[in-house]
Image 1: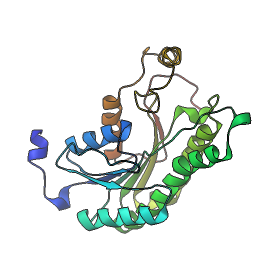
Image 2: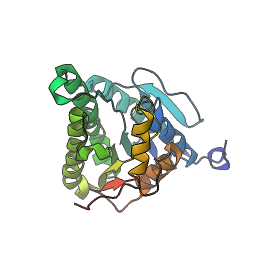
Image 3: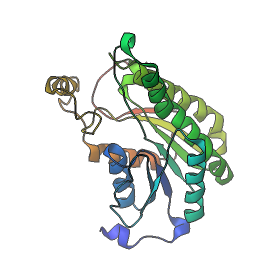
Image 4: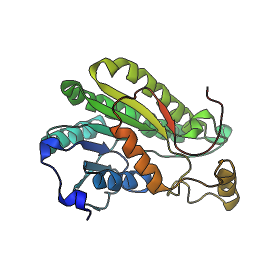
Length: 246
């Protein structure tokens, strides 16, 4: 355990973050990165609970498609911590297929988790954040929002998430609440583990640095963005793919 965590401040001085989809991959890396930076971390998983990796990480079950589950989870966080400073909408699923062969349930599931989930979770945390007149909602988006072959459902959800980010930032900025999106790039996660080697090679070649991003580096960058006080309504791309600005 780091020196920072052993000298943890009193509860009223400690920022609190709720991370959805924290059982594996980027969500789990985020839980560790926030904790190491001195945050209270509420790490939520659906089908499985995140492993406890730090004294300041509290785990819980949360279904981002279920409004009751979300409200109960947010209530539990407020009961334990008395505040909520950052929500990271990280939970996501993919179910790829050409549109002509895509099943209705695969379209619905991907949109429910990746777009409706952030809507429901953001709606739930806005109440305490508006009372605090502070807070930050961070939506984990994807470069696929620009369009990706065989991912019409996922691309549509992530493009919608950017729209949700920009709209909500305009709605609540006057109340001291920030809303931003992050495009983390291709990461070595369970979602990408099944990709063929030539696909992974192509992803690396598309980056100016010739490699895909790391979980740890991406998580640390997101923690920095979460704490940055003067930025809202932005979409941060965290890999090295070079594209047009608008």
